[in-house]
Image 1 (cartoon, rainbow, N blue to C red):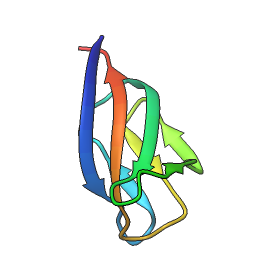
Image 2: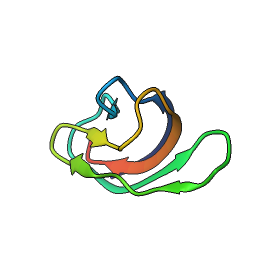
Image 3: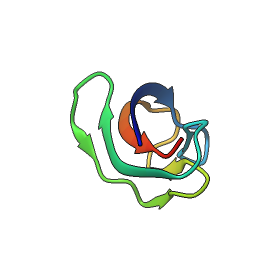
Length: 66
């Protein structure tokens, strides 16, 4: 298992694509205020997180299986 940290922006539907599959231990927070964000849905198999904010800069800590 590999730990990773990425900075991304959610799209118009609030989706954040991590570009990794089989993710786990996901932690999302606002890139500017560092406020924790509770995702509305996480697709662990495909590495997609959904939040309730469009075009929001976030940082994500997670692990994935190599």
